[in-house]
Image (tube, rainbow, N blue to C red; front, side):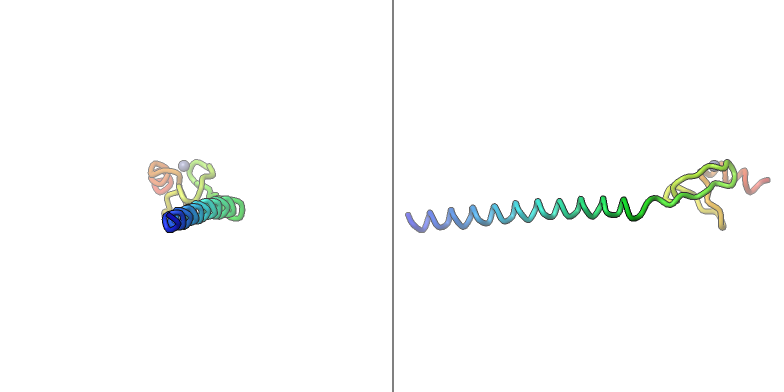
Length: 79
Ligand SMILES: [Zn+2]
């Protein structure tokens, strides 16, 4: 009887520990992401064809210029 109670206690402790770990991990992930968001704003680049700014991650790089679309690349190179 005592052994069973002890086992139950240990299991409960483990469960709480795991829950705590999971919560702190999620909190850390969240703060890491928001930290990134504030310290590294999206770098904007200028499309020389249509004169619009767009995030570098979404831009198409041709030579030393960034474009918003293949259409702009084509128009820019053909002029
Ligand atoms: Zn464009």
